[in-house]
Length: 259
Image (cartoon, rainbow, N blue to C red; front, side, top):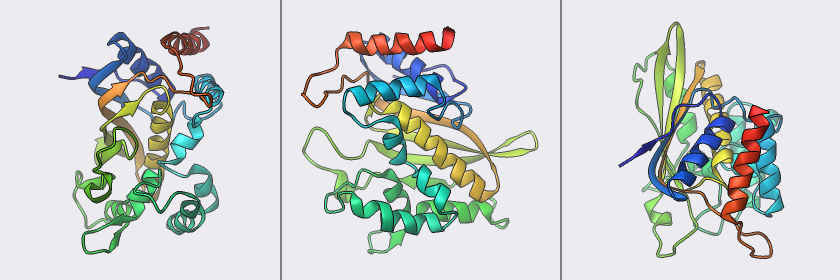
């Protein structure tokens, strides 16, 4: 069983249609498939939908769009530190402020560049992918995997928390004369109100970084949410967002686009 949302041109439009789909399925769905033709479009506060969602999340005192996006790729840091210097800057300047003592720091980017192998060595999956794509001797087009689920840290008996993004798969694809880099990701659980838009934006920024460093172009982003919900986040006073408020947010965002 799966639910395919029609392919969308940008992150903000994909968020609207994905949330609408899950609402229409009773606020919860399984194996929802999204596709974004250009995940770097509709991906800043200049987009009115992104701004409206961000305002809504801030009003509920939950993580705003940029904070969620930064768990996947540290955009501001990448403007200061270029190329490989970004990894060291992240590990020394960003990660120490996170809860390193717990199983999960909250940063997927950490798992991508600092994955512990069984023998204790550290694997920088992003650097390795960039290195192989950039190497003219490497002809593989579909062997660029990202593992973010760690069975030694993420298997617990609690209902909530921990990583939700489990795996990513980069693929090279010819588009005319252009060489494009696509990404497919798998989420075990996905909150479409609180997290989806920030996730899409962060993944698009990650793709842009890998593509630029590898000398190729950004392609399409495909997201598979094995469990998706139109969540109702609780504010600082533990008051739960109503379904009516979620629907009103979606309607307001629709109006911003249609005028």
